[in-house]
Image (tube, rainbow, N blue to C red; front, side, top):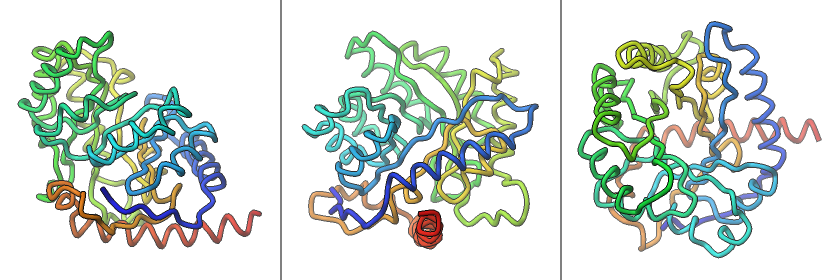
Length: 290
């Protein structure tokens, strides 16, 4: 997998500040939107197990990973198994059918946020069924709200169809919401993010067509650069990595799979450079408050 480099970063202070920002953004959310406390998924992509343990010991329980191999490696590490009995893993990266069986073996797998087609739904459903689990597998349907070729997810116009397919043909899957990555280079000064508006529209259409309550359909949107505005627009699940754990290192070792390496697009690299700038501002804020 990736060669992990622990950075000189105060995870405790950063996590505390992120939680405060989430709380403040939640209070600004329109009363017309479901008043659901957002779930914080701490994204530990390329970060060492020691950082997972540090955040866990500070009360964090939900963690996200983008790559199946890295998630499996961390989740099965002796330290995680011994010291994090109620950790809850979210898979938030593109899932290839060849990696389904390995992903489903992850201990304490809580949710897969990136289901984007019927064939993948079929494989997840049949594989989970064969494992004879006592609970259904929680999934979100990923939507490509920005219509970028580099992004995965179904088209917004197909969201209702895919959710309906899961509900009608995949009894071992538990549909809980919609997820998007959205455009990385969106300027907040331009106003409300159109990706967030598209997600709300998709949820409204899904709920109306399938007779679901809005409160029953989560929205996973918002990352380090835009999670506050996402929460104000109704996000119930934010995925935050670099703001908590510091900028990521993408030095790869020989064990990384080509398919997982190739999933890091140029725009993603740009996003992480921007996140590094945000990290610098965060460090300055932490130092001034200490």
